[in-house]
Length: 290
Image (tube, rainbow, N blue to C red):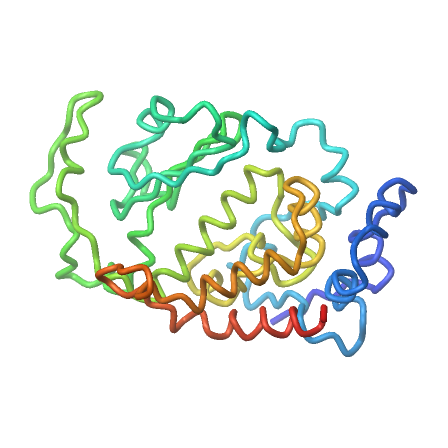
């Protein structure tokens, strides 16, 4: 087991930058917002933790990457930023793939994300993939099948009973596909992967600074260990692209955690038991900002 701890000055430079204009932008945050963002710089900080690598099969030792600070993110000419005509994230429940999304991508979409419970096999030679995306075209499709605890059982109800080889463009194999019980654990895992992949579409690379939803993961155990939240450096990257008040963001997320769907007349109550730790974390952030 290895704990990756960066010196405070390195974290400060990654968060705030050495460029005068970016430092001036940082100073526009409220005192409460800066208190939360700078929690990672204090020895007694409670909101953000160092990354723990448990084995060589974890993402960071298996995929060496350069650290990507806020200054590198801001100056990247290839990252996508929402604009007046393209500012909406669409989430589409589907049974087929990227071609489906491309035909149905609305004109005002910043990106469109397809989600499915079908296991994905882009090529016969591949084992499986959790998802596929075209970041340049703002499209992605992601499968949550393997996030279901029952997936690896022999009697898994979602298995195809008989093999088939559909013709190009024929997606009939997806008709009436199996949908497992939506547990709070499955919902939490799904929220993590969608948040992570949409973060990539905003130009956020894999995080190597602190525990963060933008950290890469090689396996389900590693993904389960990671938080749903963004670290301060990645949070600033997203905020610079979208432009939101951090307190407003946390309040909206907390409302979602506390809303079980019953007040909206939804037949199936939204399971949020697995989100309670995240809800407590949001409360601590909001209390610090006050």
